[in-house]
Length: 298
View 1: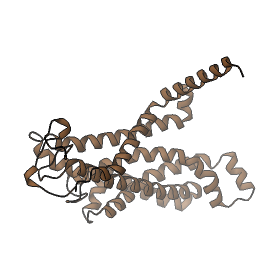
View 2 (view 1 turned 90 degrees about the vertical axis):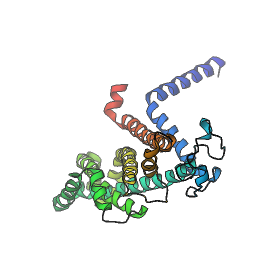
View 3 (view 1 turned 180 degrees about the vertical axis):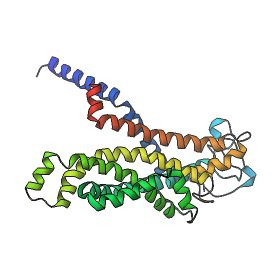
View 4 (view 1 turned 180 degrees about the horizontal axis):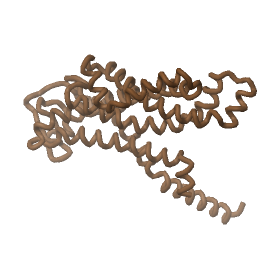
């Protein structure tokens, strides 16, 4: 193999990498942001070991050290009770991300099962589940979650359960529509002709074709759930003190925005970048996995 051939192949590989990067820039940006957020949340509490609920009135409203403060122990400052903002931000992120992903994945699992059964069997099964789903979807996501949490205790387990109850209909409707479009395809008809059991057809033939679309929906719904959780905590029906959460930090910090701007700013930025990362990944994957969009961009 000549040096010119090797050089030519390397150039072609770099051109392909540049083309893929440009085409899927949203996904790459979203993935990088997501990795940074996950690493901060996973490793941050072990590096910044301040107690997120320990109070010290003597150092209340200390400005961030990174922006001119005089206390290196509090890189993002302290709040109105002398609690370390960075520690509260990282511990609050853990709880918010766990609630969001558990809610999304569990909602997706329930929605997939119901959507598969409804679209494949049709009849009374389809009518029953779809009428329930449509009744739930008639209420805005936030309003229904607020209504259910108002009669339950605001524990993380109850919040996850409420998000599952509120979130499964959108997955079931999407999955049902995909199943209806796939059940008459030749590979499904061939599986029927070979005597495959219905559950085998759904698990091995239909489900793999549904997962890309469901995964895209999960990334987009993640931003909805985490934003809703923050909003519920903001108005006092989500995570309860002293457990830190981004929404509660925003609610407590709004009273001091003129004198301690960092209190609402840091949780607001954390929420913004987390939602942005999820939306970038979701939008980018939607473009990458949609054949019509791929043809349009080719």
